[in-house]
Image (cartoon, rainbow, N blue to C red; front, side, top):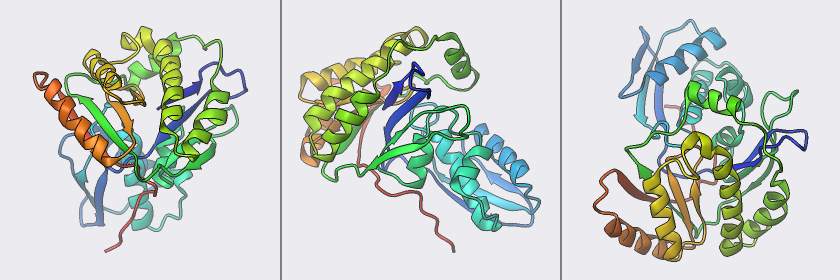
Length: 299
């Protein structure tokens, strides 16, 4: 949902707020085999992840990897982190490597800025990380709350746009100078208490401040407060039609609206689909918060 300290003024850089959702999700199957086989439907990135982890873990035995479900890549939904941790955890269980999630994350080169994806994999829920300092390998998670069971998340996805990633992402952070201030107090003293009491109106109002902080900072890279102009138009429409909490996930282009209950979410989804039916690049889906970490089933 955004960084709250792009200034580094508190001795830590970044610091972020995010939530784990139940769909889309990553699901893999991994097993020992006579030869190494990676069943990849769409992504060369999976092969790179496997090669890196096999090298880091010194895995010499053969195995097969099947990708059952994937999160869309470069959409701002943390697909790379979830895939890397899923594969790493699968190898860890399969070959009894006795590694922690933190060790897997470090080996997979995750958590270099935000710790949300790692904590979402491990714990689920709404999460706050303190940001990076020079001594810690991973950002420290300083708060975790359950996502209210009644709330729903409406995702707005744009298939015609791809979020900043890879080398371009590193170049982007290298070009941007630190911000002049931070929003630590806003997140810890206002957003979290609002969440704890189930006050979506207040939580959403402060979300707009957090989104503006991130959107204005990254505007020179992503071309505006939001990465996709079409998604930006939808989010404005949703606000005008009663959604009190909207924003962009990470680099986008995916946008989101958090709604008070399933009935409201379903009705609004139907109406917004009709309003933007002519824009075939846009898709809409509903999901719940996921308040548990990744599951491993041994067969």
